[in-house]
Image (tube, rainbow, N blue to C red; front, top):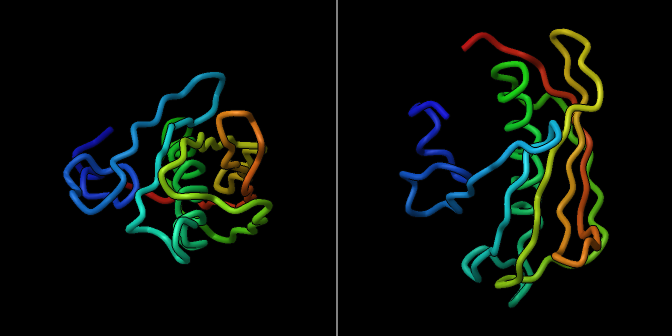
Length: 130
């Protein structure tokens, strides 16, 4: 990953206020383990929905970057299925469902370690020049 992304709120290793997630890329997916601290709660013990959205967005952006270069979110649809609790382990993953050249259709999910999906998203990303 380029130094240009080291301040990213979700994955930046030089951002002390962020999550500093490390993504891997098995089977054409972007995948990271996450344990979200209480400081990102909306209600006590429950992760703020905006943080959940940011995690899903980042997983999709990461697979776009890994597979086709820099792309930005054009539109994202979210479905919150179960509460996401602070201090619990989750897996966030993103995939490109359809590559239409400049347009990438992607999806992502946030699941607990038992595979239960707590949130999912679909999005359209637009490739941009770096």
